[in-house]
Image 1 (tube, rainbow, N blue to C red):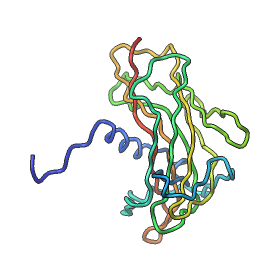
Image 2: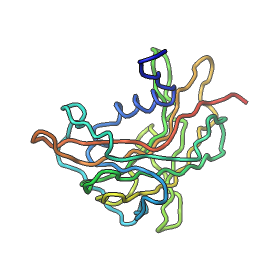
Image 3: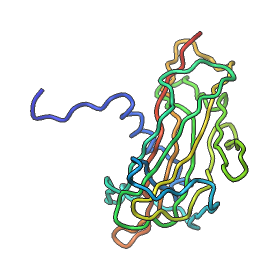
Length: 219
């Protein structure tokens, strides 16, 4: 095919779908991006611990006409393409880097392990998933959970300066008991970064992710 745009891969489609589904309460203040070592200095997550959150809900900037395609870059390594159900942890590292020319304000982080549901009767795997982040200050793994969802806020810096990065180590697993059957779980493990910006006189949020998709294979 000539003159057209190459179709998105499954992983690219999943990432775009997830970005649209980032909960509004998380959209309030996260962001960043990962890149190569030349994009230092580095800010380690959990030091300092600070969560900034606007008092009111804010729309994503892209919904009011703002586009920030060059704001930040996200990279990760360690998310396997497939996992089996059980107690084994899958550890991965996620980095978000500010590649813009301005400081990102009201910056915050969150992480989530779940899947997309496309048809009636399909299930979410999150109730069977465990998600943790490494706290370098306390040298311990901390669990993230919001009700039945394996997700939550990750401590990090309030702002991210140009060329500054934030790194987070996470791990997840999906326990036995998750019904498999005929459902193919379009699953993901993502670190989300969001910051508050202003477009056309209105406060709004910009988000991006570092992580990857995976599927569950039967033993």
